[in-house]
Length: 93
Image (cartoon, rainbow, N blue to C red; front, side, top):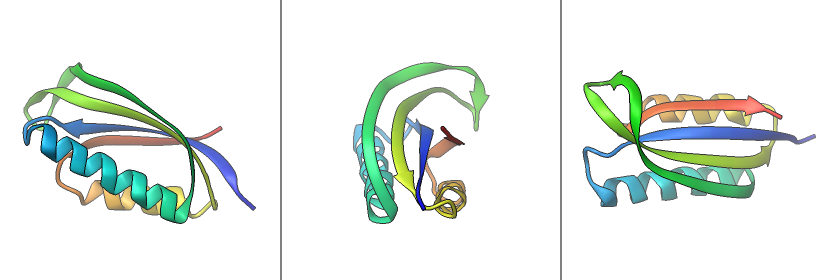
């Protein structure tokens, strides 16, 4: 059984554009390997409402995907230990 999910990633822009692109590719590949990516909407670089790790800007990516129910917890775990990911929020549609 698969469920639909939405995920919003906020990546650090401190490492430059190459760092952001590497993170986008890493997490899109991870989602594709464990489910099906339906849509990736890049919101781009935006000012954060408050400082996160002393950073005032972040790169936002909104992803819609389907996967098994156990995968979102693993996605959050991996994002939590990956340098360059400021925030991740995954919700079930």
